[in-house]
Image (tube, rainbow, N blue to C red; front, side, top):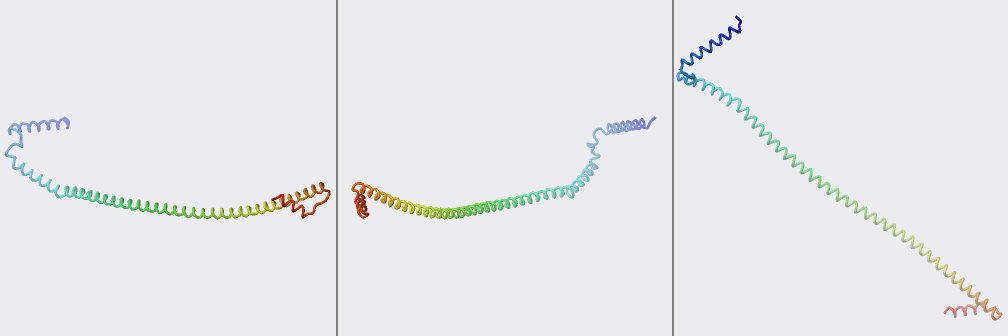
Length: 187
């Protein structure tokens, strides 16, 4: 016979012996009152060991982990509020520097505008002065030309008067007579 067959027969025999013992005792062994003191003792020992392990090892470790986590969350919240405050301060500083830059830019623009306006006014004044001097010179030339033209017209009129009178009376009039005649006509 093989070892397997022997082991199978031994297991079957042990099972039958246990079955016969249970039938002889009359039911479930845990309800047998003769074994209760031993069951209560082992219950107390097992409960005590489990209580000691839980109270001494596991619960403090779990409580420490919970407390550590609670502390880490509180630290993270404090750090987040610090970062928020720093971000708000940085935003306020940025807004202030932006406002200062805008004000400075407006000041520079106003100064530049004032300088440009002054330069334009100065250039315009110079141009007006040059134009006025050219205009004055042109008016002076025009007046000179008018005087020359008037003089030439008077001279031509005097020559024409002299030539007409000379042709009419065959005698040349004097310059004084021609000038008086011209003055009388001009009035």
